[in-house]
Length: 220
Image 1 (tube, rainbow, N blue to C red):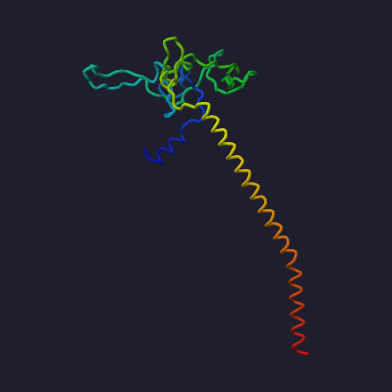
Image 2: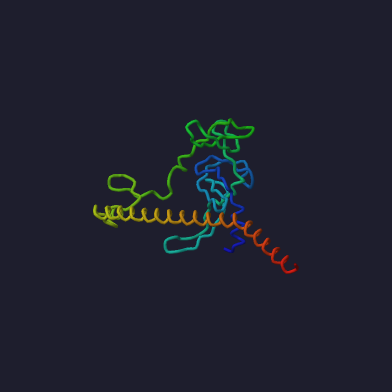
């Protein structure tokens, strides 16, 4: 995939997805317009959804040792803009908006002329993980292997901690000394600059006076 193709694909993707797996939707375009079904799959990188039993197509399967092959009927993807979620109370197609409850939970609500404005609950299918997390023998979710958790990567004895603390204190004292030295040099430089700025007009006037006297003495 080239850079231009990837850029066009990124621009065409929907930034906010409101249709989830398990939602009851109605198709509003195509050969199955007006029919309702349940969303079984969501492909966000393609802006398409799979609706159970709708938008059926014929596909030729090559014969293999495990599969006899032939022509099968399967659901094809539908563009997400061609489906609308159904209101849980009225059953009519509606738009979807978002709202925050009093406890801070973000929920979906139905919007539109035929909607009831109620909360659209998250389907149970969307709550399920496609790839289950590994569990231990006790039934707890195990996200990190036990051998990795119990692996000792570094031992820190008490004397090492004390030496580390002493080293940190010495570094802090050295940094403070450098800071004080830098501050003293800066003050000395500022005082020198002020003295030069103050004495420069006096020296300039004195030099002009001496030049005038010497020039006057030549012509006299």
